[in-house]
Image (tube, rainbow, N blue to C red):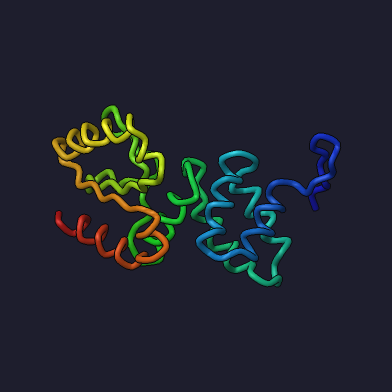
Length: 173
């Protein structure tokens, strides 16, 4: 069993332990962002998998075990992680986070199908971003990409609609 580590003079459990503990007890759509952050910043998927074995039989361990398989260090924010989980839970393939397309990086994308999925948070209300977004959108559209954009309202109030919209874009092929 991994020993506590010291961070700035404070004894702490290892990152994998903290991530699995949280993934066991928080809501599902909050658990994947925790695991994504863990593999992005502090530990590997193998560390998480080894840690979850220690927790076998505890409440919430099934949720943690399942979501560890989807943890991705490329995820940039909790909303992107939540979007990926909505799509996965709807039976769609898991999109790739931070997909590079020409000069742009998509939040999520299905490369072969040329479908991009974006979460537009408050940063998109910045004046400079408001000016740049149409240029980006037009370039992607002009290069055959079907872009789908979602906000906090979609994510928290209409998750089923997200899956339907993305499914329709994927099926257009």
